[in-house]
Image 1 (cartoon, helix red, strand yellow):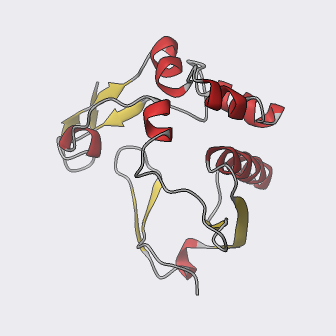
Image 2: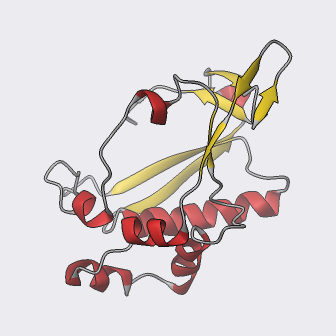
Image 3: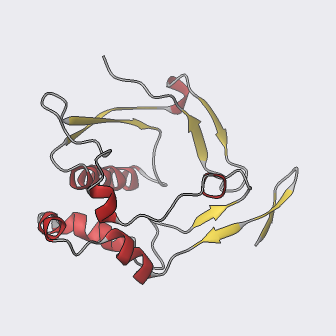
Length: 169
């Protein structure tokens, strides 16, 4: 698909995987992971199933606009979930460091109800994915109060915030 902005035109490539490919990559048939899957709440299970629907509003195909996009410029070998889960490099919780703090910046979607829905799903998903950790949200702040630079993406028209890693004191 060809998209044109105000200043230039670019060829856009869409990465879309079949339901079978996604299920193979993301769902493991290893016993220890099946036991974890069974602990998910019905809401988390529903959210995870959402990613397999072709008409999903939460998990859209990836659009690549430039050769410098991450996927094109950083080729990586394929990895299924069990390989990721069993990797010795994966971080696991340690005593005294068992909370993920998420700073809400701006809003999601077109209403406060949509924002609350996304935040609730994000909390449940993070607690399932980072099993054993609690998730706490900081009070929301507008983008203008972050001190971060930001821009509107030329292609998606979404706000992009340039942030840096920091550790809360």
